[in-house]
Image 1 (cartoon, one colour):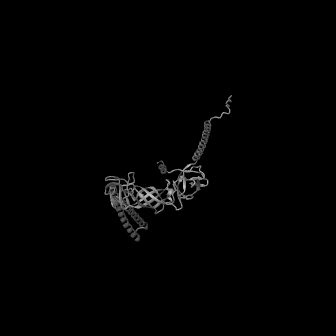
Image 2: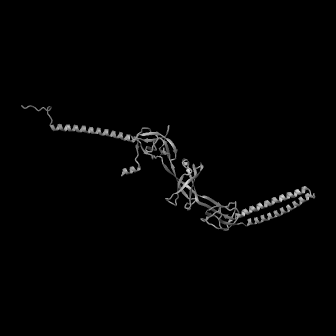
Image 3: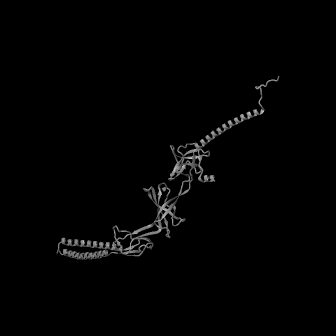
Length: 391
């Protein structure tokens, strides 16, 4: 009789064992891959979080000592500028020059007809003649009475009275002569003449116009300007006023001559800062050909030299801490170093630093207030570099 089959001791086929082992390996591989992916994700998250915690900063433009330019608007004026007013009233008889006419000192510009003044002169001459006649009569009388006193024909009192009358008549002659001279001086102003060599820049009258002296209608008849040399007035901000010296050279540019510069020099200043916070500075330049015109708008360029030991940084780079003004400098390891500085001069938008920073340092512009020494930072790419990277 055959033996029964033992189900418990039955050995499965070999291919089923291999399949089981493969399944276990796959499951283990899935678990390992999942764990690795999770670890990598956690690491990436930590790295991203760390990168996001590092601030990105922009660098300031740092420059060393040297000459820089200060450009300011200037007011061009003639060296001499004289509004010519009348000194006597009347009517304009005729004028001889118009705007743009070159004139010489003493040249006749216009004549005024003064009938009232002419009559006053005639009356003053008559008054002087009357006073002189009375003086001669009084002198003769006083002389005769002196002779009578010597003969005891009259008293000394009467002779003294005649001498006093002569003195009064003499004073009357002097007063009449002075009044005539005053009117003659006014009459000389009927002729309007140029006070100096120059150019007539305005004429505000015409033939027959009423000339009124001392009233609301007393306007300048002519304006004469000497343009052979010009004055240029510039308001220099207070922060730059100490850099402007007498004799300092400057360049002048005007719109009518693009690309052309004119040499000027500082000759004076107001020695006082005005209400606008600026120092009024006067420059002068020769204008022999008359190319530049008074009243023109001009740009004046000053060359300002800095001290050899100073470095310029933008004012926006400053940090104010308990130990004074500070600059944040990025080191080679991308870590911040806070450096106390000494400000040599505040120029408004720029600061001259006397010590604490060098032209080659990487100074942070607009640094965060929370920045501390040793912080890690990233430097933002310049616009040109960012555009190149996008290409």
